[in-house]
Image (tube, rainbow, N blue to C red; front, side, top):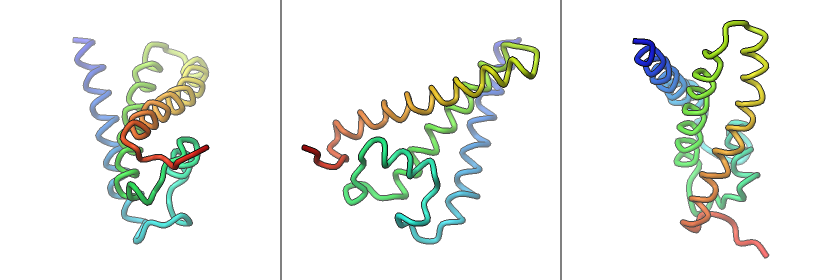
Length: 121
C-alpha cells in the first residue's frame, strides 16, 4: 500500500508541475525571444550551448518543463524518506541542484547527438 502512495505522489507532483509550466509559464510568454524566456530555459541553453535556430524555444520549453517536473517528483520521493523538516530541507536542496545539472547534461548529450548545439571549436 505504501508503494502505491509514493507512486501516486510522484505522478501528482509531475502532473502539477507540468500544468504549472503549461498554464503559467507558457501563457505568460506571448512570443519567445532571448529577453523573455524563463530562467531555467536560459540556464539550459547557456550550459548546454543549444542553438535555438535549430530547435525553437517552445520545443525547448517543453523539454525543460518535463525534465523539471520529473526532478521535482524525484526530490519529493527522496524527502518523504525522512520525518523532520530540517532533514527534508537538507536533503532537498543538494539533491535538486544535483538532479537539475545531471538531467540537463543528459538532455544536452541527447541534443548534441541530434546536432542541435552550436558548432564550437
